[in-house]
Length: 285
Image 1 (cartoon, rainbow, N blue to C red):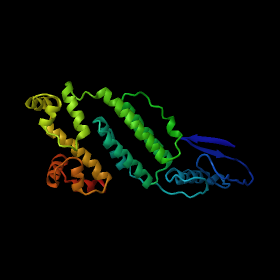
Image 2: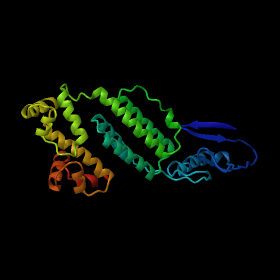
Image 3: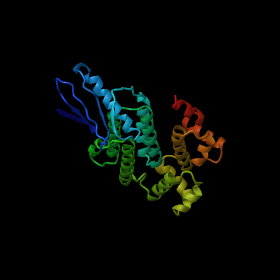
Image 4: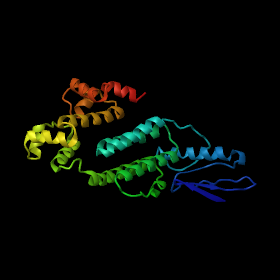
């Protein structure tokens, strides 16, 4: 008998020239699957099938011991996940915690829907975690904890916790959006309160500076007007909601701070060259 372990999945091989009987226990501390005796020329197929069978526990939080050799085929949406990873990194760099959380939840739900193999899910988690740690200048992350997760939801919760920690560290390193503290304060406020009524006058009062001075200073330090920055932030939030929800376009516009449908569609199209409905349709194809 010998043991092979990878990404927290441990396989026990019992070699014998005689038929072996498996006596299952009433309960198990971790999810387990097993196979009856198998010929050598069938070993690879059965082994893969057993690892796929663990998804019965990984995705659905089931308990117990299962005997199965059924093998299903995972969905393949590599292009979608490449886009998701790139978008997650981009939103991370902009300090958009809410959008990053939504992207991770949507990716995890997609993996469950398509029944991704557990090693592939864990590899994706490690890849994302390393990228976030790199951006946060957190050094080489300890990925060993990923091996110990036996449920899809546990790994998702851990990823969200790590996201918050890494983004907090990233913001401490790069919070200086510009070299002017009042402009940084304004940007931070917009990122946190984009759905509220934000005007140049209000932000000037917020940082106790002259309105005209704030207008010219913001453009000088960021390369865009304050109102343009507010609109772009709202559009980025709307993009995530269009992809992850089935809410009407009008509701999404209101949620991110646009006063009416027509204005939302007009501004969204200015940034994206398509309407919100067209963006949602093309992204889901």
